[in-house]
Amino acid sequence: MQYRPLGRTGLDVSLLGYGASPLGGVFGQVDEETGIRAVRTAFDLGVNIVDVSPYYGATVAETVLGRALRGVDRDSYVLASKVGRYGEADFDFSAARVTASVEESLTRLGTDHLDLVQCHDIEFGDLDQIIHETLPALDRLRAAGKVRFLGITGYPLPALVRVAAAVPVDTVLSYCRYTLLDRALEAALPEFTTRGVGVMNASPLAMGLLSRRGAPAWHPAPPPVREAAAAAARLCADRGVDIAQVALRFAVEPAGFATTFVGSASPENMARNVAWALTPVDPELRHDLEKLVAPVLNHTWPSGRPEN
Ligand code: NAD
Image 1 (cartoon, rainbow, N blue to C red):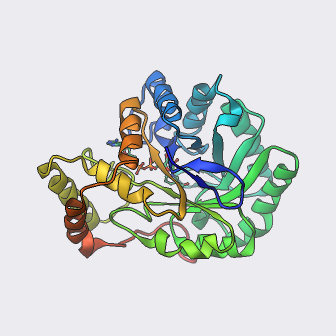
Image 2 (image 1 turned 90 degrees about the horizontal axis):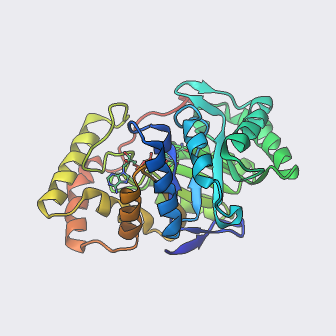
């Protein structure tokens, strides 16, 4: 495994992180014991950062992750969870709710502190509230020793840039913004790294688009992007390679990302993901894939309030 500094936190994190949303059944039915083995496999292979949220599976992912973490040395991993998002359209970034939310997460995760607490999908909230109410409330939890570092997450980058410029957050996380299909997060890196903010990349498989199984029905990508991803998967299959392998390696390469979170509730897939992250891909295949997806490169979808 390779490790990189997480901004100015003093933490070194594995270049591949474990994203726990699949433990909540976000991508399909999950057997709990298998999901727990997926987490342990990732740890055994050197992964030392885990991302979760009360939103994933309506708290189920945190509960299952808490079981997976039982008995694991608390100092051996960096635990990140979130506040503010609780359902598809259920957001509450008020000081009272996020303060209670952290306590609930600590109980489910079986720990007395989170290493990182992140405002989840800030583009759905009032950014002024996040700057003036939510993050100050989380800072009080930091002073109380319940959390160590503060971060923000979301899909549209301008909202992350605006909040990171207003409040000295420790991390930002965006998803599907540095994949074979989108390069925006790499272009935005200086906005964050010059402030000492650790940048975390998520969804290297574009939430399943860049996998043999393809995207789940709820996936927000517009049809041309779905079609390009399917064509890319076919091209890889023709060359005897799994599209996920190319997509994963591509996403972890920029050194400016502290980590890239990939999610799977399968121990076999997590073992594959670690191996793939550390193995360069055939340059010719990569070139042909980049050419194939060029017409839909950086095509986004709407997320959050129009003003954000
Ligand atoms: P992803 O790109 O990691 O794709 C996950 C999908 O790919 C799942 O269907 C999984 O089964 C499949 N997959 C994983 N490994 C595979 C393999 N080796 N072969 C074939 N298929 C494989 O997307 P994700 O799970 O959405 O993102 C990863 C993590 O990033 C999440 O679990 C979460 O922790 C974090 N994340 C955070 C936010 C946010 O804060 N707003 C948003 C998205 C993701």
